[in-house]
Length: 72
Image (cartoon, rainbow, N blue to C red; front, side):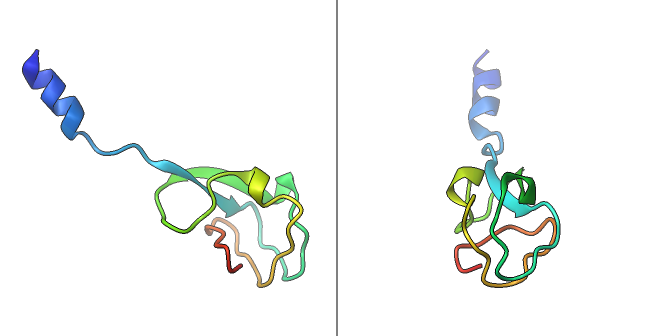
C-alpha cells in the first residue's frame, strides 16, 4: 500500500490548461469564443481561460494551435 501511495506522489504533475487560437487570426481581430480553444498544456505566461480574452483585440497575427500570450 505504501508503495502505491509513493507512486502517486511521484507521478507527473497535472497539466494546466492553455488558450490557443482555433484558427489563424489577423491582427486587429476582436476575439470571440469561436476563435479560441482550451487545450491541456503547461506554459508559463499564457492564459488559462477563454473568459479573460473574449472581446480583446489582437495586436499580431495569431496562428492556429499556438498559445496566446499577453503581448499578442
